Image (cartoon, rainbow, N blue to C red):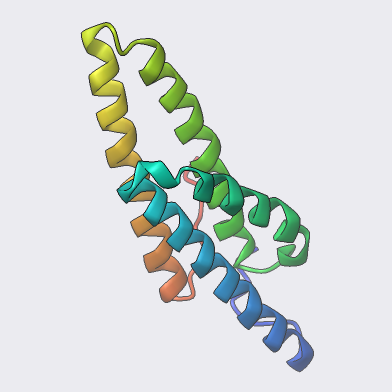
Length: 123
């Protein structure tokens, strides 16, 4: 997963397409964070990630697709929690925290993608 080069010359074109696709997904996530009315963009983004994830196996770009998928599911869970507790004061904090966290995830992922670096999990 930390291999930063394509396996052979034929893989270079596919890797470029996957990088472009990851960029599109980060853009969809960013638009959805900035304009919540476009939450459908998050759904489209995660569908793209799931469909193309097998194509990324064994490359550094795989970490970006997994990062984007985790960002979607955790954001959805926090969004549901925030909405469920909205009538209480804690819901405001949950929603605000989710917003800040989602911005962080999109920015970090996009920066790592731009640098052609894998996102690694800390254990």
